View 1: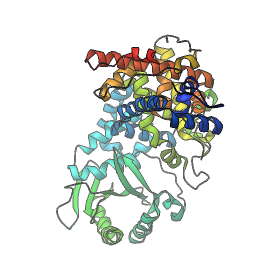
View 2: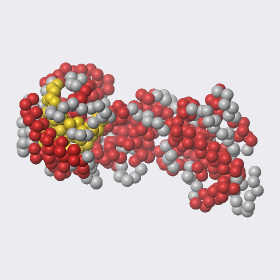
View 3: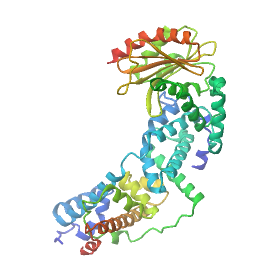
View 4: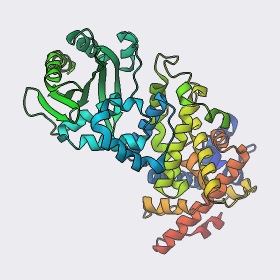
Amino acid sequence: MKTNPPNALSCEQALARLDLLLDGELDDAELLAMEAHVAECGRCRAEAERRDQLRAKLRQALRKPAAAPEFEQRVQTMIRMEARRGFRFQWQYAAAAAAVVIGLSGTVAYQLGHLRLSYQQQEAYVTSISEKVSNIMRVGLIDHVHCAVFKKWPKQSPPLDEIVKEMEPKYRPVATLVKQNIPASYRVLTAHQCTARGRKYIHMAMMSTEGNLVSLVMSEKRTGETFANNGIRQESAQRFRMAGFETAGFLAYVISDMDEKQNQQLAEAIAGPVKTFFNSLG
Amino acid sequence: MENAMTEQAGNHPLAVNGPQGLSAERRFELEAMPHLQDLTRTASRLMGDRTRAEDVVQEAYLQAWKSFSRFETGTNCRAWLYKILFHCIHHYRRKWFRLSVVKPMDEYTEATAAYTAPIPEHLTDEDFVAALDKVPSDFRAVILLVDVEEFAYRDAADILGVPIGTVMSRLNRGRKILREQLSGIAAEFGYGISMEKEADA
């Protein structure tokens, strides 16, 4: 134990304040006194290092990803659903109700936004419908169902420049491009960035005067993902018609409840400008 | 908090656009969702298993969303979420089992005025997790908040709804128990940590 000059801390006093020092809880005067003591006293400095090491090792041991991507997605979807309607969990009935919904889905696909489905029922429906298409098409379909079909859209839409505020500025021009290349009767419902099942999307949804719901869904390519041609690939599942194309870095989908020909025409009208725009982003 | 939690999301006053032109949902996504990992980590260590931890975290986020209109943008969202989380954990425990009440230690100064033994290099991350799990839950909660999540004492006290002095005494006692548990684990593997060295001071 060292000999202390007048007004300096003794080792006993320093030890009593050591945790406060390491936790950043000392005021300026105490901090100066402690720093002076620890700088002079090897034994207290070693003790500070040991205690700091314990905290560091504990943090290292515990600070690992704790939440699985599926759980994160579950919470996000729950908030999204809550944001649109005050829904209540009905866990005990979810499985049975989902089965009923899936059974009826062929005829009620576009009324889902008006049903008060629980999160689990919606997830079950998304899983069911996405299993009917190829892996590459599933990427787009999941977001369309999650983010457009399950929503109840208002009869009036805000102006496009208001709608696009939920997009990063660099992506906003794509909403105008799409609007310019589809029939004027289509109303833009949303243009935003979202996440579904751990994957990020750029999503624009529109509705025709006949009530057809159309999405342009885009997602960054992951390794190996490609439509393997330069044209437009089509698939269908129940009432959903899908047309997929790609830019240098993104997969893109036009998904709707129109007939195959109409959906294809819409995709052809959008694909050129969208490809040019996204490829110019680099 | 109870009052805040009864607000219905369907009537959310910020449901269209908040002060920054973003919808409440988007602001919640930007401010609250990045803390999901932290809350899940803390809940996992306090609830003992992942399923129960996810239940309380999900409930905490639901309650947070319902009272999001009361959250002031720019204030400490993480501390606010933790406060809600601990409310949910407390509620969950009261519902499912009786908590063993741990009385806070008063001998704060006495217990910290001692030299400690070094932590053996051989202890793994899993050993630290196992040792922490053996620390009584009230003490473990404070260690998680201060040592792992690096909250200030004042924030930890606010989150737990206890005085700062209680945070300090629980922290001190909890760290001591943690060292004892690590020492026990080290001894099992013959690493030779000895808490007797503390008496060396």
